[in-house]
Length: 176
Ligand code: GNR
Ligand code: NI
Image 1 (cartoon, helix red, strand yellow):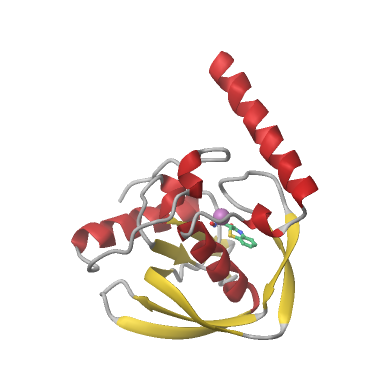
Image 2 (cartoon, protein in one colour):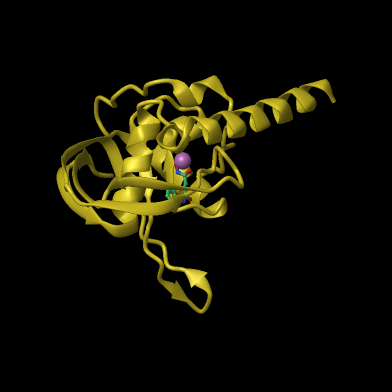
């Protein structure tokens, strides 16, 4: 297992559409392991492969909030080729953040519940129904696999502001 570098806005790879995996083989499982390690280290509640510059439709989510003596209890769910098969009419608002847009948080409205079909760590076809934080995070991760970021769901004024801020920071960095 290895920690991978998380790429940040305005990296163009965050805007690319990821490719489905053919099968969940050992190489894909090694990617999943690295993604979990990187997510827990960050720390975050989800991570899409494109955030570590691997353009495959793979994501990991751990929206459980259990702690044991201050240690996070690890319960990662691995998704290959996730697809939303149903969304609720009911909507829910969460303050979202993204490891690729550090220290920026904004309210986003999404369907409160959804069903997702996917291949699990063993390559088995599964479908789950989610609500609460889990529903928000899996929708956020599937967006990533399609080159969509949570700032695409907020006002253009706020989006332009945050993109400008990160573009300036990148320019300063390359000038230094
Ligand atoms: O760690 C994360 N927290 C979070 C909070 C609210 C809604 C979505 C998320 S996902 C984010 C990690 C991340 O960037 N995943 O792509
Ligand atoms: Ni994100």
